[in-house]
Length: 247
Ligand SMILES: [Zn+2]
Image (spheres, protein in one colour):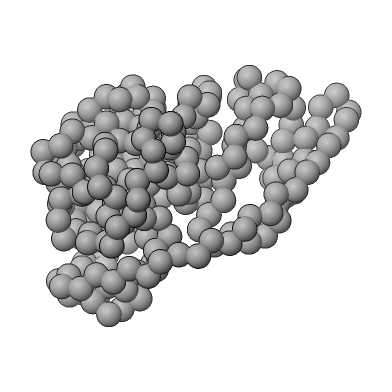
């Protein structure tokens, strides 16, 4: 994620699509896992126009193999697929709700808990020998019972149990930026509740598709799935060294 500040009142477009600009002139641009295309950012104010381009460099990602998962967690049958489709719809709707118009993301995004990082963003995943979607979260191994904190101020948009991610919370931080917390054993918030940065929102566990207690933490900006490690404040929590994945 790249955060820019321009003069308040500037109209910002990304490849011809309007970008939300805060009252103080901040806006954010996000890149996904495998984005390679150049983006053109155009700024317009008082009849004047300026533009610049951003070209992402492709990263290389690890391959992560996880075996010993139950079949229903890798190739679920029809009834389970229906449940998963409903879960995905819930998540899409929760992430589409973004009404906050404050400069929350300017203050940064905190790690929700500290612990050994056992799964990193972008890994290609081979589950019981079958290739599945890459991993778009960060897995942090913590004992069941560990308090999970909100990464920033925001509003709860989803707080219930989902098939793959177990106890799940999605927080809207405004301007399309949201954070997701999964595999929780307890959820301590409800939809539409306002939370503050550092507030306890739930308790870590191993619910859903998980082989041990951990938190799966994700950061999205609009439709882009970002790398939480790159969004989080590096100062407070120096980049943990990735280890072979277990979860
Ligand atoms: Zn994960």
